[in-house]
Image (cartoon, rainbow, N blue to C red):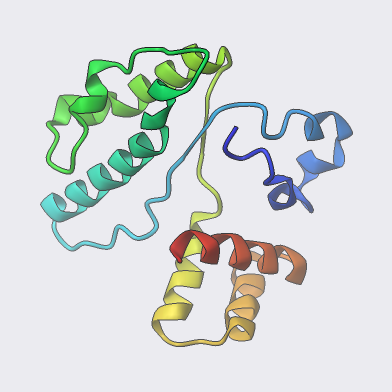
Length: 162
């Protein structure tokens, strides 16, 4: 599964103190979404950006149709997802994707959004040319987290933006 190696993101959280959850981490299909960079000033532009984010989530899973041995047919909605999709398609899109993934993997799906605020702090820091040390300090102060956790967020979120 896509997030099988992301256990470090949970270190320091209460749930990670329970050993029984360590074996569950990475064993469920995850739909990862972040709307932190939706900063458009009009409804139409913001809606289009959200639709692009949903399209990106679909794109991450479209290759499943070609993988053995399951060979599940992608639902028709996969072909309707676009930045200009209609309201009914957009409103049903995440449900359809989670149903497809649940059927494909035989497990319930988790829709996950990691510290959207952390992502926004990191992106803003980069936009203003702050050093990594300054960004780490802002993460610690604004989110009240340890330096180690701030470093993990910076490392993980920087990898996605490269």
